Every structure is written in C-alpha cells, then in structure tokens.
Length: 427
Image (cartoon, rainbow, N blue to C red; front, side):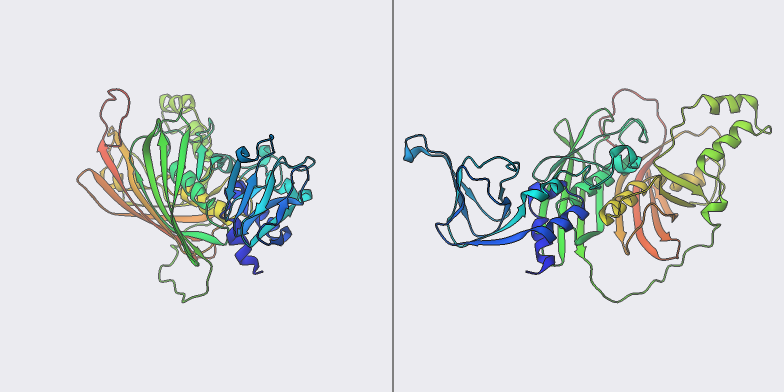
C-alpha cells in the first residue's frame, strides 16, 4: 500500500491528532494490514488482540459481554477512522469485534503503543523543560475530536489581553493537527472579534471544510466563556513541483549578528549617562520579561517623533524547535503580529501622544518552507491609514534572500482613551 495514503489516512484518526509528525511517520511504517471477511471475529472477548486496530475500510460491530440475555447485549458500530484496542496492552478485550462486511484494518502492534504517548504535540522525545517557550505557548491540549484547549502562559507576552499572535499561532496549530502531515498551510485569514482574557483558557473548535487529494481547508473558532472571540480560515496543500519566480528582493540590511538585542538596547537605556536619571529610573522599574521571539531592529526609531511608515527587523524563536514544519509555520504566524500594525502610526508619533492599536484582521501566504529558529527578516510597510484604521503589509525573507511569506493586516489605530471598565469587544 502507498505510504502516503497510509499517512493521509492516519492523519484523519482523532486519536492520532495529538502526535508530532515524526511519530505519525513512524506509526505509518509500523502498522500492518489485516483483512477479514463478513462474520469474522477481529478480536474475541478474553483475548489480548494483536495491537491497536484502525479501520481502513468496511464496518465492524462491537458486541458486549453476555449477561445471560443475548437480546440485550450492547452493540456499537465501527466505521472508517474508528479504532479499538487502545490501552489494552497487557490485558484482554472485554468485548467481541466482528466484521460486518469485508473489513481492512491497520494494526499497530502493542509493543509500539508508546508512540501514542508523546511528550507534546510537537515533540516525540525530550523533556518539556527543554522545549522552547514559544513551543510551550503553541502546545495545545486535545480534549475531543477536533477540539483543543490553549492557555496564556505566565511568561508569554502580555498586552492587557490575549496577544493576537497567540490566537493566530494556536488556532493554526489546532487546524494543523487535524490535517495529515504531508499537507502544510499555504495561506490563512483571521479575524479578531473580541478581546481575549489572559486568565481564561481558550477552546479551539476545528471545522473540516474540505479534504481533497492536494488541498484541505479548515475553519477554527476560538472561544472563551462560550463566545467566539477569534476566527481563522486556513488552507493546506501537499508539496508539489511547479513554476517558480521571485520578484521581491530582500532589502539590504546589516546581518543580525551585528545588531543589538532588545536586552542590550534596554541595558543601554539604563546606563547611558546622556539620558536623564529620572528616565533611567523609570526604565529600571519597568517589568522586563524577554519575549519568546528574539528581535534585532535594523532601523533606529522613536516613539516621540514622526518617521517613515516602515520597519525592518530580524527575528527568530528563542531556543531550538523540533523539525516539525507545521510548528515552524505556527511560530512564524505567532511572531507575525509583533509590532506589525503599529508601523502605520509611525508618521503620526509625537511626544506625549498615547495611542491604542488593536488587530482587526490578518492574512499570511506561506511561499516556501520555514525555519523559525533561524533568523528571518521581516520588512513592513504601511501604504495607508484612514478612518481610524491602519493598513500594513509585510514580507519575510530567510538568510538566503528567499521570500518565505507575505502578510497583510488591518488594525484599529486611535488616540488612547481612559479605561472605563472591562473590555467587551475590539471596537
């Protein structure tokens, strides 16, 4: 049987949504095909069976143990993508499973059941303490088929409400876990509906809009307190060879190794004798929590005077990421909302001006494979701001000058107003 077909099949089994792509690939190598005729016993009550069974084709019936009344034995119908035998290793089946038609199952031997207990949805090996912070942020808890739960971690960026990049990255992670690992996201479109509460978990409900041979489409709704606060549509494509060109060239900027980090910039503000002592004391009192994304600015800028509506900076995830390409694209999506729409305010900045920026919608097109724990250049421009909304576009390049992603966003940009209570909506 075609290995790609096996991987695509396993990607649709709800039990396996929690697996890293590396584990799913190993399962695809280890499963064995078993065929049964109508009426055959797949497993019998009191037997251990051969492993974990995934129904590839056909139907089977689960018949519960006899209680002396054959007419009242509980029954359950099993169809394609259903499974049984999980957690049975070392014990016996309490039911009979009988083929109702010609039946084909994929069987993962009991000795390999440890593959179904990964350390995280992104890593099959290692210990959680060694995972990067952004990987922890993008880790989701599977709670049911196509339903996941995410959290705002204490060490993640806090902006009085759930960071928009967290919504995008976690929602994309949820969508990615419902698509076979041969397909990767090539575009997404997101809407921020209500400000998220940092203190509440976020439930991500994935809707399978389409599953095709080459493409798959998912809609994800993020909910808090039962209300949809964020919505995302994402399209996934299987890798294929096609026409290629790139008209956008990477800007000429200094390499990231020659530029100061945000920590170094902060240290300069603390120690620069040319700055007023009172200002340096204010900087020292500010709580500083390093972002999970390392940033090196290519341009000097100021929040006190107007500047060009553009920005360029290098970024990468702190720490080492697993090789899962889905994770790298989720990290890029997470980082893409940092400092993005605020560029539309650059021409309007002046001393004493306080502003509010809130993301309204966000789109990303992924052009090429991404390595998010290596330096990527983010080049941002703002063609327009009008009607209380700022519009920005972005291009992301790898160190080789290859365009890996294009982005757009529109956001609310206003002069700040005094807070009057709990935030209810983005508007």
